[in-house]
Image 1: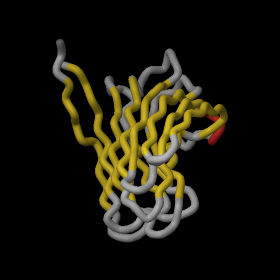
Image 2: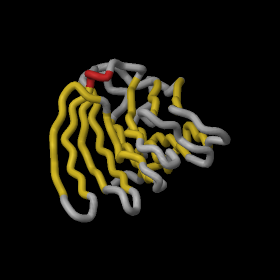
Image 3: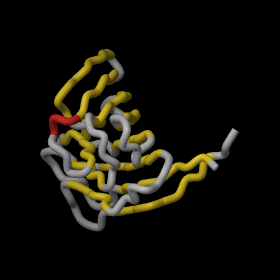
Image 4: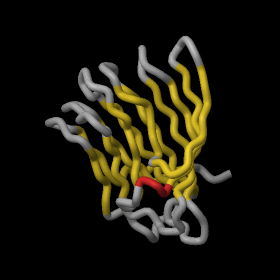
Amino acid sequence: MATPTYTLIGSTVLSSPASSVTFSGISATGKGDLVLVAETDTGAGIGVTQLRFNADAVTECERVTMFGDGSSATSQSWGGETVEGVRNSSDRVFHRFEIMDYSATDKNTSGVYRGGAAGNQTLASAFRWKSNSAINSLAITSGTNQYQAGSTFHLYQIVSE
């Protein structure tokens, strides 16, 4: 079995608040998967972390999500949405987006998300971006509030050798 290699292709640590972080110039000739790992804080405000590919319209993703908050659990499916992560609160939130076969142009791009925050919620979802375009940029946004200084974002390319 091939051993996967993680190559860091972009990294940002915020020194001041920002509503989004964009990774652009992602090689469309690359092979393998992308993994975006982020640890975010929106201060006292609540914001919904969203991921957008190639600055595409909000209506280009479908997802199935399951989440729990310690007292209840539920699942839902959505169409015409962005890829969405845990709702930020006053807790730091961990996000991991895995985007499969990001440079393929013969099928839709799919992926999985896992995230959580102490005292908030745990969320997992599977998503499909309804496009046959190779991903050359992705943006992670905080919705209605800003990510605070110290929030970290790391984008990796994973290739099996």
